[in-house]
Amino acid sequence: QEAINNFAYVDSTVTLLSDVSLSEGLVINKGYDFTLDLNGYTLSYESSVAGDAMITNKGELVITNGTVEYKYVGAQDASYGKGNYTISNCGTLTVEKATIKNTTAKMSHASYAIDNNSSGAASTLVINNGAEIINGTGVAIRQFVGQENTVTINGGLVQGTRAVWMQLPSSDATKAPIATLNVNGGTLEATGEN
Image (cartoon, rainbow, N blue to C red; front, side):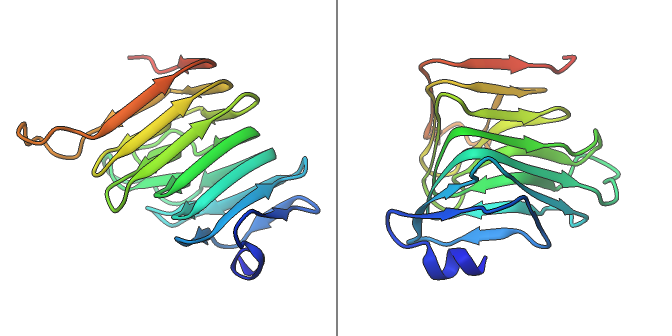
């Protein structure tokens, strides 16, 4: 977090020099614009906090060249409840030549590899060649639509019980959802039993 806060200015790069296990989630605030170069390493995080995110992006972030892996290890909800996210994207996120994983065990908690959440502001997600977005027990990409919400898949692999879930939080039929899903290439694979 310190490296991001101090060095993630426009068009900069933050580079991992080894595998890193986080003790708390990272936050990229609005106005930050940089590339997170994993440099072949793994950035990981285990959390027991329901409703937690490993990375919350409100800025402009490119992730490349490695693995981002999150696992929720806390108590299970009695019913489907708070979500746990490898990345909660509320800004602009591009993933290229990187693997984004959520390895949470199957439970009542919602789990997403990437939650593209536009409830607070417009959000944009781009998946390019060489990217893998994987969730073995939940949704790979959720589009939670409040304001403009765009997901563009140009290549790579998106794999989960549902590859992409477009969730409209309102049942108000007078409000048209502002959601766009562009699939220009790559593989979308749903592994769920339903």
